[in-house]
View 1 (tube, rainbow, N blue to C red):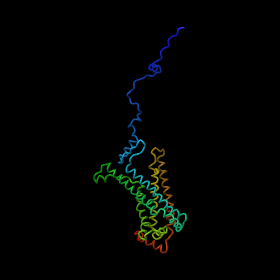
View 2 (cartoon, helix red, strand yellow; view 1 turned 120 degrees about the vertical axis):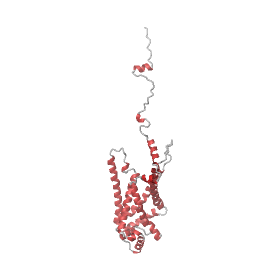
View 3 (cartoon, rainbow, N blue to C red; view 1 turned 60 degrees about the horizontal axis):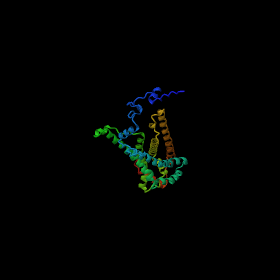
View 4 (cartoon, rainbow, N blue to C red; view 1 turned 90 degrees about the vertical axis):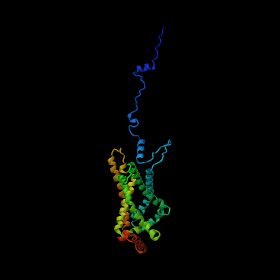
Length: 320
C-alpha cells in the first residue's frame, strides 16, 4: 500500500488569507483616540499651572516621593487665617458658656459669677491668654488684611497698572459677606475688650472686680447703648464665626459641586442650614446675655461706685 505525501503546512501569510485576514504594512496614521490626545482637553496639571501663574504663585513641583514643593503667599496666609480661627474658637466657646449658657441655666448672676471666676484664670492667665486669645486673634486679622492687599497687588501687576489713574480704574478684589462681617466685628470687639480688660487694668491696676455684675451694671445705668451694642456684637460675631466655619468645612453654598444633580436645591439647603445654626447660637447667647445678665440690675455699695467710675471714663457712656 503506497502512501501519498502530506501537503505542506500553510505559511503564516497563507493561514491569514484562509481566515479572511490580510496583513498590511504599518500605517503612519495616528490611531490614538482624540479624547486622549494631548491638548484635546486641558490637563489638570496645565490648569494648575495657569491658575498659579494667574495669581502670581510659584509653580508647585512634586518629587518622586510625592512630596510637594514650595507654596505661595496665598497658600500660607489662607492657612494662618484658618488655623488661627480654630485656636480663637476655643476661647469663644468658653466665653459663650461663661457669659450666656451658665447664666441661662442658673438664672442668677451671682451664681454664674462663681463659675466665671473659677474658669476665667484658665484662659486669662499670663501664659494662656497670649497663646489662646491675643496671638490667634492678631494672626487671623493680619493674615486676612495681608491676603486682601496681596491679591490687590497681583491684580495691579496682572493688568499692568502703573499710573495712579490706572490703579483707580482696577477694582479691588470682591469682599465676601464673611469678610465684611469680620471687618464690622473688629471695632465692636475692640470696644468690648477695651471696656472689660484694658480700662480696668489702666484705672485700678487689675480687673479682679470685673465680672458679670459689671456688665449688668452697665445695662442698668446705660440701657440703650448696652443693649444695642451687645446685640450688634453678638449677631455680627455669630454670623461671622458660623459662615467662616462653613467655609473651612467646604459647606458654603458657593462650594457646592458643579456636577451635583440638584445644584440649586443643595445651595438653598446649605444657605438655610448655616443661617439656622447661626440663629440658634445667637439666640442662646442673647437669651443669657440680655435676658439674665442684662436684667440683673445695678450693683450697690463700693463695688457699684467702682463700676460707675469705670463707665464714666468711657465717652459714650458718660454722655448717655
